[in-house]
Length: 271
Image 1 (cartoon, helix red, strand yellow):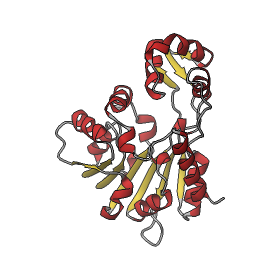
Image 2: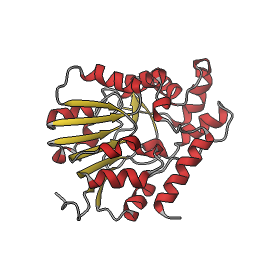
Image 3: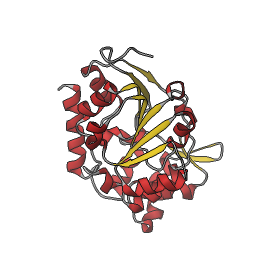
């Protein structure tokens, strides 16, 4: 199976199992968006952003900015940032978190529906958002044709972590859902598209939380668990939790990568 078709197959399998939603705007409803904003809206992105900053200038496209953890960094270095966000609740939080920002334009749209409106960009970013997009070849192909450097951040939990499998099996009483497209799947897509890229593997801390209770709250939101199950959740997670420097952490499913993709040679040389 070719890379693009394998990617599509994984997205379809996730949707069929209920592990992902075809409509990202519906998936990130008010409750889930508020949960994500609490834990990630203003989180430190320096470990990954350092691989992007040399390319951030001029006109920038951000795909799926969410509540703006990267956006607040991009607007400091770019002349104009166009943030394309499918969830109206995330878009509201983005406006709230960044406040008045004259060089930020927020567009409420799925990126698949925005492709015909693409301009020319010096830099584009899609961090932890491509794993649910089925027409991946068209999306990456169109963006790279319009962009000097396209940075793709991969989602660590695209490959289901062991702790999540345990919670799904023992608390939700269901078979763990299929994995989303992972790191190898992304490279297979880029290779099939004939694109040139560079992979960076940042040294990231584990998913750390300041307290055991905060970790449990995060998992409850991540897996949409009833808080009444908290005691059972604590029991199931106990073998997987590590404490380092006073922070409580869970293992990832895969490494987070930053993959910088260059504009095709026919459209422009690598910077």
